[in-house]
Image 1 (tube, one colour):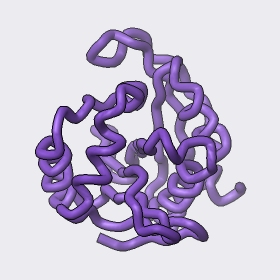
Image 2 (image 1 turned 90 degrees about the vertical axis):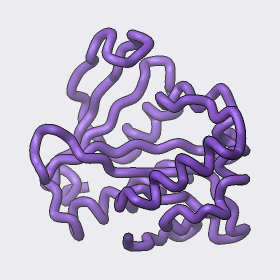
Image 3 (image 1 turned 180 degrees about the vertical axis):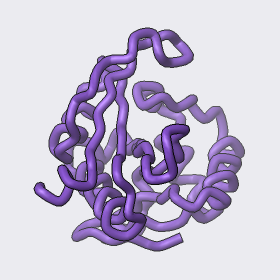
Length: 170
């Protein structure tokens, strides 16, 4: 998997040694706003990492300054077609509202459109997750609609997408 870099971040493959950092933010109830299950222990975080290592487009978000893992960003396949993917991200509570998520998502979008030659990248958030909505808007996604009762807990899912042409014009 290709390592990606920004001014302040390194996006790299997960390592088993990241389990402590991952558990530190995955045990917070706030991860549920991003559709994640709360990790009950470090072993659950380690299982996530092992699964992510097999998955080619799941990056640990690492601060260059401290080498601390502060989140994750991933591209996942869609059932639409092979040049359409969905992006998802989660960031530790301690590092939100500092532009890190936006920085990571923008870098993955560049990778998706210029290196993977995708045509569309989509993203969703729960209506209550205003922080995620701000990231999506700052990145330039276009609102598509709201899927009512979409999630496992029957919460609505607000959907956005970006085409390669839209990305190129940003």
